[in-house]
Image (cartoon, rainbow, N blue to C red; front, side, top):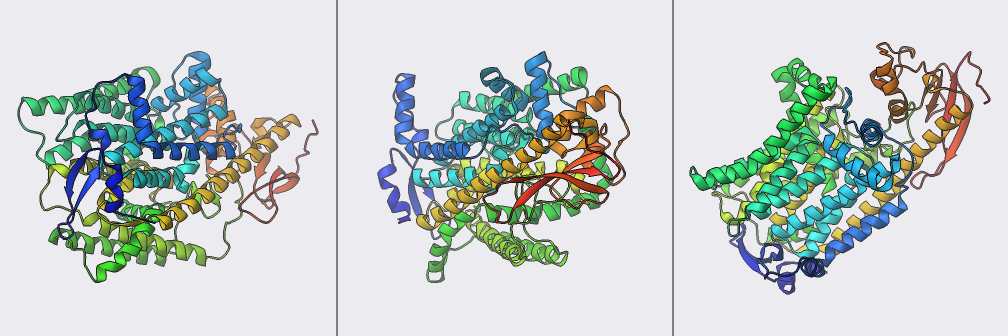
Length: 614
C-alpha cells in the first residue's frame, strides 16, 4: 500500500507543522519523542515508549534473527580487527591498555567496549564479534529515534532503520571487530541526543551534555569523532542560535567542553603512556606528500564515489519515491533558485565522474573492500575468491543504477534547500552539518590509498545512516510506495545475510586449514594464512624480537611486510591452487550459499620443502 501524509494521522500524539519547499505543501507530523510526558515510574515509561514505538522491536528482532543465521561466534579474525582483539586480550588478561603501532584509529573506546563483553561472556574472537553486533543494533535504535525526532512516521522510521541495518556494507561490518561500525553507532547516538537536546521549542541541557560525552567516546574510537561537536556548533551558528551572550556561552560549553576533555585525556594517555602509533604519525606525512594537488584529486574522486555509493545503498528508499515522481510531469515540484544551481552542479558531478571513472575502466563497487566483486568481506588472502558474476555487464548495470539513484537522491534533498534558516529545520540542519564533516573525515585515512584506488568502502559507513535520515526527512511530505521499498529491503537482507554467512564460513575454513597445518608441525614462522591469521599470531612476536626485515621472499603480500615479518612463507594458505613456486599439499572444500561451483581453500608448500606429517 502507499504510505503518505494521510497515513500518518493515526500515529500522531503530538504534532509540529513543517512547511515544505514544493508548492508550499504542509505536513503535520508525529513526534512523540519530543513531548514532555507526565512524571511516571521509569519502568512504566520505558514500557509505554516501547508500546508506542513497537516497529523498532521488529527491526531489532530481524537483526537478532540474522545474527543467529550468520555464524557470529566463529573463531576467526579478519583483516585489521585482530589488532583490536589483541588489545582487548591485554586489557582482559593483563589489565593493560595498549594500542599497537600499526593501529590508525584511536580505538580505545572500542577496546573498552570489547573488554566489557569479555568480562561478561569470556574472552574469545566470537565474543568480540558479538560486541559489534550489539553496538550496531544500538546504532539502529539511535537512527530510529533520530528519524522520529525529524518528524518521520513510525512505518518509515522502521523502513529507514532496516535499510541501514541490512544494507550489505553495514551488515558485513557488523560481523567484524572493526572500528567503523562501532564509531558509526556511537556517532548516531551522539547526533540523536544533540537533536533532542537542541530542539528550539524544548531544549534539554542534560541531553546536550550527554551527547558531548558520547561524541568524546566516538573520538576514542575514531578520530573523526572530533568533528561531531564542531558540526553541531557550526549548525547553530548558521541558524543564528548560538548568540553572543551568557546563554550562548553556556550552550557552547555544554556542546564542546565534555568532548574536548575526553579528547585531551586520550591525547595525554597516548603520548605519555602508550606512544603515538607509527601509522597515526604517518597521516600527516602522507597528506604533506600528497600536497594540494593530491588533496584536490582525492576530494574530487571521493565526492563522486560517495555520491555513487549512497545512491546504491539507499536504493530501497529511492525506489519507493520514484513512482511518485512520475506525477511531477503534471504537477512539477519546484526547486528554489539556489536549489536549481546546486542540482545542476550535482548532475555535473554525476556525469563528469561517470565519464572519467568509466574511461579509466572503473565500475561499481569503486572502492570495494568489504563489498566487492567477489562478494562480501575483505579478501586479504593470497589468491582471489571467485567473482560473484563473470559477466561484466552486471557491474555496468550496477554503476548506472547507482548514478541514477544518486541523481534522484540529490534532487529530493535539494527540494528543501531553504533561502533562510527556520527553526523547524533545526534537527535536519544538525544532521546535514554532521554529514558534511564526516565527508571531510573520509579524507585523512584515504591519503594512504591515493595512488591505489582512492579509499576503502568502510570509511563511507558513517555517511549511510545520516543520508537515510536526511532523505526520509526530505520526503516526509511525499507519498511513498512502501511495498516496492520493502521488496528491495528484502533483497538487501538476502544478499547481506547470505554474503556475510559465506564470508565467515570462508574465513573459518582458512583458519581451520591453518590450524591443521600447525597440528601437522608447521610453525607460524613458516606459514602465511592471510592478514587476519598472520597479524593475530605473529605481530607481537615481531615487536618482541625486534624483527625489522621481512623473511618472506620478494613479492609477498602487503601484510607480510606490515605485521608478519617473522614468517618465511614456506607454506601458504590460499584461495587458488596456482601460486608460482608452490605446490598443493591439501585442499579443503567449503560451502557457499551464493556460489554454485565447488570452492576450496588450499594449503601450499614452496618447492623444495617437505610437508611435515605431525
